[in-house]
Image (cartoon, rainbow, N blue to C red; front, side, top):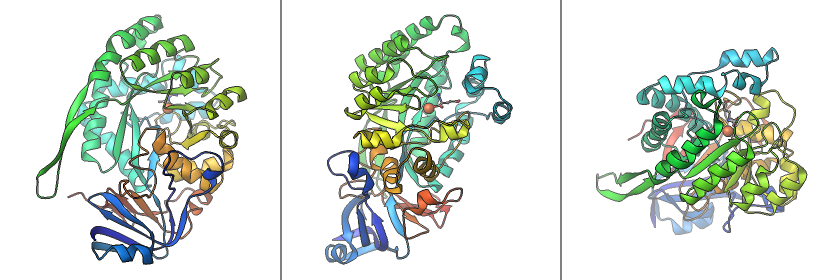
Length: 444
Ligand code: NIG
Ligand code: FE
């Protein structure tokens, strides 16, 4: 067989393979290492994986061969929780927090998320795309090849749709794949400050049915310009709610989730970021949410319910770190209870402006109690599961997209061991080299 790309002689190939879905329990501590490993990619898909000698028996020729000797090869990272689309910045609030103001106080005073809402409403679509693209480039350089992206800095119809438009335009024009989430319930818009239920009515009766039905046409051509794929893609796969004091209470959260489910959307929930939200986790699990995220102050009995379900637990260690708080998601406990644990950056201008999944692995090993292997699985195969992308990405397995990384080092554990510098040397997305020697490769 002749292939487009052959990567061979990887000192170590960490496949994170998990053919039957996400990893739980002891399987989390195994990243499926192959020594002197090789991967063959054709038409964007992985067609062979194994020891170089075995892959070489199947592959008779390759358009491009990369010798990965001296490198550890790992799957492209999946970042399953991001607020990467926004305009402006909040350095002044960071300083206010360092001087003692709390995150929820700043929000209640009309700052925080609402500050970014003002800036995002004022930005043109082009400007929003331009500002976001810079962050996507940094994410790609740090090895993220697929990311979820939320709306939620509009809180009005026009701006929420503008954000979803930006996500779609960036998904089409940037090498990274973006999975869109509608987060109209991110904060109480200033217009509804004294009547939160009326905003929930608006979300439930107008926005959710509209967003759930919104689709756009996607076309893909091959190098000769022939149409190889045409179809329709939903403008938002998931509906998410920020369930917290000062945002949406449990009753409002339930109304929003029910409406989204009825409209055919999959569910995600921001739960227990600061205070236990009196039952959001069991409710989300009962409703079949794909993931529940944050889980910093979740009581143990709710973690047990979660661990016994198919709902993913997404830890966001950049957030307590970014807010200089002491409590982190109890990752160790979730893994030991048999739950499906993933990690994400939560990249946003308030609590965690960090483009790097390796930084999340560094934090997760120290503050969530994970081993380097568990952190890598949480950032790849289980992160893919948390956005329903595990049949396509998140591990180096035959049939999946050719998304992988060559590290500067021959041992994946350095991803978590070291921090603050980027060890991602080469990024391959759908079989195309998009980062080489730490630099973006210009597209075709
Ligand atoms: O996940 N909790 C709500 N949303 C973000 C913060 C967004 C912001 O501060 O702009 C989070 O931490
Ligand atoms: Fe978030």
